[in-house]
Length: 95
Image (cartoon, rainbow, N blue to C red; front, side, top):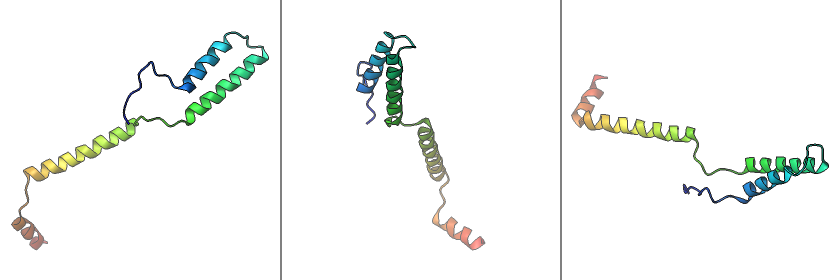
């Protein structure tokens, strides 16, 4: 799930984009082939944008860290400041 891909592992879409870059070098900007290849390149980049990534966003990590910190604060407070059952009854009577 969280395994990282090695740098040598390239997905087929990236490989296709790299091949198109190599083919674009063979043509000048005024050729019809250049326009066709650049349109294909645009389509490949659009496809790449639609593919979901397996990475966890920074916002999600911050949310998880905040929740864990809050839980730890509550647990440490309850551990150090124990409210006994008699104290609870006394607090209820004061109301």
